[in-house]
Image 1 (cartoon, chains in turn brown, red, cyan, purple):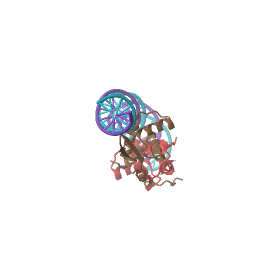
Image 2 (cartoon, rainbow over the protein chains, first blue to last red; image 1 turned 60 degrees about the horizontal axis):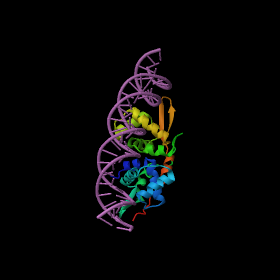
Image 3 (tube, each protein chain N blue to C red; image 1 turned 45 degrees about the vertical axis):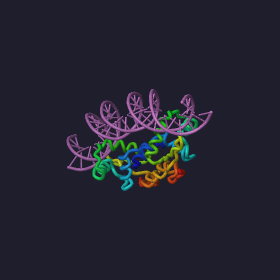
Image 4 (cartoon, rainbow over the protein chains, first blue to last red; image 1 turned 120 degrees about the vertical axis):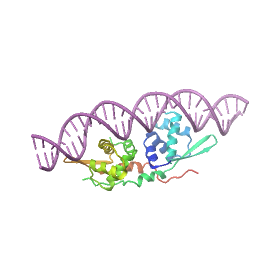
Length: 97
Length: 97
DNA sequence: ACGATAGGCAAGTAGCTGCTTGCCCATCAA
DNA sequence: TTGATGGGCAAGCAGCTACTTGCCTATCGT
């Protein structure tokens, strides 16, 4: 549905945030590449299916776009939905006394 | 603790997002003022304790600062923790083909 | 054709989350 | 002082979420 709530929910998970970091660093990675990245760089040992579900959440939120190429699936970061956050509230506001 | 995860978790709730909206529109509101705002403007009928817990989550994340004044407690929005989000990922990125 | 690789689907489970409920304390007005 | 107002604390419950497990489909190399 790619609503606003989906974006916030997708960001509320450290594994998903690390996946976004990895895709920003290098786009077009496959599921297995992202899995090994999480293991080697961040020490978390999750199942392939867990990561696949995380990527599904990110894709539903519009933060990740994919493309099937043969038997692999490539993933790219997409930052446009983040604008809904950055434009909603000011980042510097201090009315408090 | 005011960690990064707390900020993302605080934002992953529509009621809390509406509370931030209300505090951006007018700072220094009390708990009851925020409760009536949620009811009249957005139609959600939550308990006072529910809203209090939401404000507690926002305060732990550093997105809301408070000050006790007599028997009332005033709340202000604080956008500085949002910088951790806006600076982490680019908002316009399109490597995908 | 055969096996191996890359990924998907669905059900089940443990833990967290939002909400309610009930009771409590502090402050202000009469 | 008494009552009313504004808010806090803690336990309990229902629903969601992340994760695992098991099985399945499709593509590539040989």
